Length: 229
Ligand SMILES: [Zn+2]
Image (cartoon, rainbow, N blue to C red):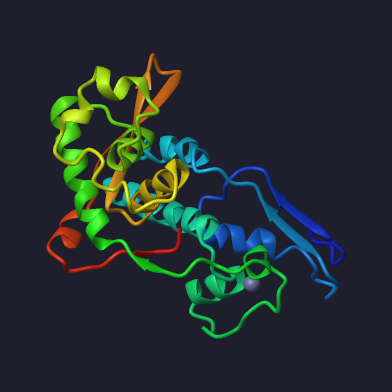
């Protein structure tokens, strides 16, 4: 964005930036004259897939991991219910107690309290392993709905997922199906689960999940998972 004007009133992202550094630089174009300006970032979790697809074309494993980690920070920022200003300042180590005085979307509502989801995370990992033994390609929605014990999907019984030991293990942990899906998405950006991209005919892509690099850390109780859903 080669814009050098002081009176930019809106910066609107229709697609996800690849890193918080990129977002901060672009959003920072708004309001250089000191007047009120607006930064809007359109987000849905599935947008991450397009960027992951590009990252997976990277030649070096280190570069791929670095880029995935940077992208996960952006997605985490989008999904967070904490003050946006606080999140950005924390990321750049630039003061921890500054809030935005009610100018970000999260500060206009009361955020949910953080809750310890460590046990649910451990059980979700077990649920995923059991599902993978039945079918090699599991997506976010399937894992979320099976862990919650949802009966809303016809293919659950057709594939026999209702027979695995951890089917319905998380049924009391989430208010609804949307929350259980959000929970699995959080586990992906926290790198407990990993979303892999599978190209079909080099045109269409589907995603499937496996355990991520932090799965064993949670299972060995070396880290805990606190989330605000
Ligand atoms: Zn705020």
